[in-house]
Image 1 (cartoon, rainbow, N blue to C red):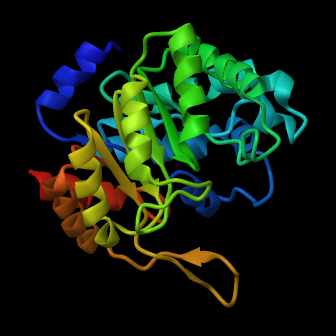
Image 2 (image 1 turned 120 degrees about the vertical axis):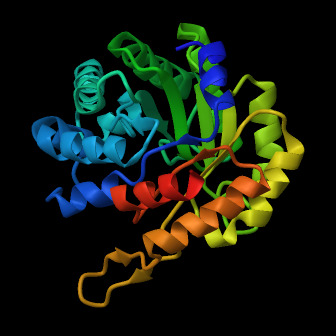
Length: 291
């Protein structure tokens, strides 16, 4: 998909993303501590059923489950050589789930390690890793790319560099942050989105982070700093930790989530979805609220 085609779709109204993937896969039986991408490839029905439900609920875009399918991250599981196979397989599962009526985004994320000079990751290594994954995603037929849950602007800029080297696909960029906009690896989201716009991102914003009820001023601040579309893909509220299981529990109801998301749209976000703790029911309520 070209940037012009995606701009035309956005011009027809708000674009709705999908909701959480990881937390719903765990509900479907995925254990902790394994390679999510490999598990999904071995249990295709879990993602197909989930993404079909998102499409039926009203998602315009679903994220292929390629989150950490880059050679560096796969290498921690001894699977770097499986980069091409996994990306092609996982994009194929998403396409099988939603057909051609819903857009499929190739999903990328941080390696979780600081770049030089603050950490061990070299630009060249990150660039080659992301370029490999993006080449695989483009070959597999994704409609666009998404760099999500990024911890700093510098690694996100590497993804943009790598994308521009191998394809012309639109790129969404979302960072995760504190409620005041501070990024976990330094800096703030307001300066970061300006950098990302200058480097060619199609749309920018935040995902994960907090619940939508805490993001209104952040979204308004982002909107004031850039001219491209703003993305909001927050969690289902702030989690509490279950004393029995030690797992995060998100208590925000779908109806409350959708009401708060309307405020984010009013603050300037035009691409909306859900992150941790959200389900197809959250997307259904969001779709209803936007009509």
